[in-house]
Structure formats: structure tokens, C-alpha cells
Length: 492
Image 1 (cartoon, rainbow, N blue to C red):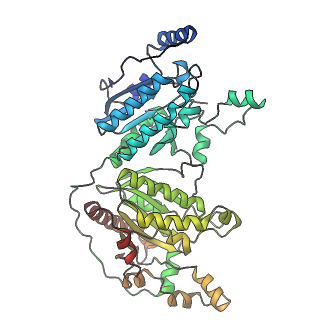
Image 2: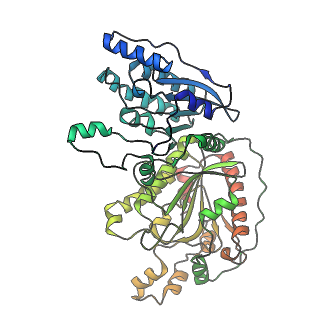
Image 3: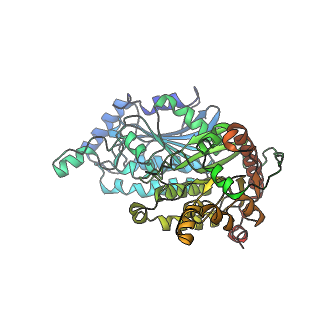
């Protein structure tokens, strides 16, 4: 069941600071309309006290100035006609002009049927206004309410940098009543729900209205963190790195107790807002995507999650498409990107081949080399094959002492060359897979010591890594993104 439906003003009052709301709305300008439609509009005004289905304005949220565009469902089912589209576009454009983060709260049956195609095509104007707001590097955060369908879901409801929905909300493109009328059967239950959208990586979270202010505040704390002028960060102490035997490093990196990206964020990050999936129907547990801060330095964080990768569910092409969503976010929001390599290897399966795994590896490499955002790669543990290489290109590369990277698992290389698995240690040594070897070759810039093994000191190790990430991110924020040529030069 959905949560009790709040009016637009009730939601605004719940989320914004008391007495901070200022409307931007002016009386709607309507063209010639029928008497029947005029009567419907008059009844909607009497019912809601509003003159249209869209409310726009600004206020303070936890003391932060924000712009808001919200639907009122009780006004003709929140439908969008020409006048409401004009108001919505004007609100988005004003938020852009004034440099404000924009909070959107759609709830609508979609296009206003009384106006037909002239209303339907307003989706183009609305989407273009949102695109310009995002192109200006300004946050666009969406809260899908019950119900959000049709042209609203297919335009401004689906363009958020971060998109969450209320529990049990009907969310989808085709309204179930329309489906039943067209096809003579009910639409399957459980598909057009916020929970199902989350399960399929289309939205980032399911959140009740009472928690919206919290998640918005945490997201904007990261998204609006200063890029320039943050306090200088002292260089972390560089501890001596011993000459670890290659196979010893490989076996240590595989210890189940070794900390992965989740513990790294838990111990080392100052703020974290988890995201979910590609936004396009895929979510892979092998990749964690989040907005985060290390110290004062904000970033988009992409980490291969050792806990989410299993023999039954290895890293697939969906995980790399999820990573590419993070890359786009970093560029759109002018945030540094942190990638974390820690994988047993990408999936070797029919599904992975048919899902375009090779192409996704190639696109990740191309996107990272050319990304218009500062980039930082952390080699945290295992680095098997193309799935690991896909997250390597960066302006700066740091590595844990026992991290490594190879074209195949050493056992696979042994099988190819020696037709057995017994020569895996020998192959690992010959292929120079260690972070230490990559540092000597100039591929890795800095190694973080393990004392003697991250699995034996997880919290202390994560704090050391976090200090290095904070230092490197602060430097990258000061220098800006590197060129594709500079990023490629380390592999010469």
C-alpha cells in the first residue's frame, strides 16, 4: 500500500524549513477552451485552492536555499496542460538562472487529455529545461509520488541525478486502466511499483516523506560541497613498502576477511549517499555506486564490491553500465570520480556475451580516458582481466600493497601456457602483476602500506586509504581533470 497522499503544500511544509516558502507562481494564461473544460478547471480550483496542477517556488531546507517544482494530484489528477507546462518550465529556468538546486516532486496521470496533443508535446520543452539545468552543473533531485505515470514519468520524472520514490507508489509509463482498456486484461501486479523500480536499478531508493529532508540534505551536502578553496590537506605519511612475494600478495588479496568498498566507506568517508543501478533497468550487486565525501572533498564513488560478486553472480556488463552512469554523473555535476578495482573477474557466460560485456569494457575505457572530470583510481584488491582494467584509467592511481592486476587470473594464464594450474605462482611473477611492479613501471602513483595485511587490520587500513583519498582528491580539485593524452601517457 502507498503512504497517505500529501498535497503539494503539505509535502513542501514537511520538507522545507518553517515559514521559508515563497511561491514563484503567477496566474495562468489560457487560450480558448470549452465550457466543459472551464467548468472542470473551476471545480479543481475550488477543491484545491490552487489555480493549476503545478506549484513552483523556493525555500530553505536545513538552512540551504532550494527551488521546488511539485505536482498537486487533486487538481485534475496532476495532469500537465499548456498552462501548467509553462509554469513548470518557468520554474526550472528560474532555478537555473539563480543557480539553485532543484527539487522535483511529481505525481500525475500524465498529459491532460482535455488538451490533447498540444499538451502532450510539452514533454519536449520540459525535458529541454531540465537538461539545461543539469548542463549548468546544478543538482536535480526527484521524489516520485503516488502515482507518477505517463508523460510526467517519461520526462521530468525520469531525469534526476538522484531519484527516489515513496513506498508503494504506482510508478510507470502506461497507466494500468489504459492497459486494461486497450488489451482487455489487467496489468500484472507488482510491476509498476517503486519497490520494483528499485529492484531493477531504475530508482535509487524508496523513502517515506518523513525521511525526504534527510536524504536531500545529505545529497546536497556532497553535491554542493566546495570544489575550490577547501582547506589544504597534509600529505599522508608514506610508510615503507616491503618487497612482497608475488604469490603471497595474490593469496592475501583473496582472503575473505579483507576489507572491501563497504568497509572503506564505513570507516573512511565523512558522508555517503548510496545510489542504485543504471537508472535504465539494470542493477548489479558487484558494483557499488554512491555520492561520497572524504574529509571535505566530494566525489562520485564507483567500487567493485567483493561481497556482491559470487561464483553464481560474477561482475556482469550491467555493472559496467552502472559504472558509466557514475561517470556521467561526475561530468554533469563537476565532481571528481573515484573508481575502485576489486574483482575476481568479469562474467564468462552466454548472458555476458549477449549483454555486450566486451563493448562495455571498451566504452568504460574510452569514457574514463576522455572524462571531463578529475579521476582517481584505487586498486584495492584483486584485479582480474578486462573487468578490472575497465576502471583503471585515471589522473591518479593508488594501490593497496597487496593489490594486483593481470589479463587473467594467474591460474587461467597457467592453463593457457602450461595446460595446468600448477604454474599459477610462476605466471603471476612473470607477468609482473603486483602493485609494486606497476609502481615501478609508472602506472601506479602511490602505494598504501598493509601492516602486515589489510585483513588483519581492516579499520586502520581503511583509515590510511581514506587519508590518501582525501589528499589526492583535494589535489585533483585544485588542478582539474587531466587530458586524454596525459591519462594515456602512463602506459607508454
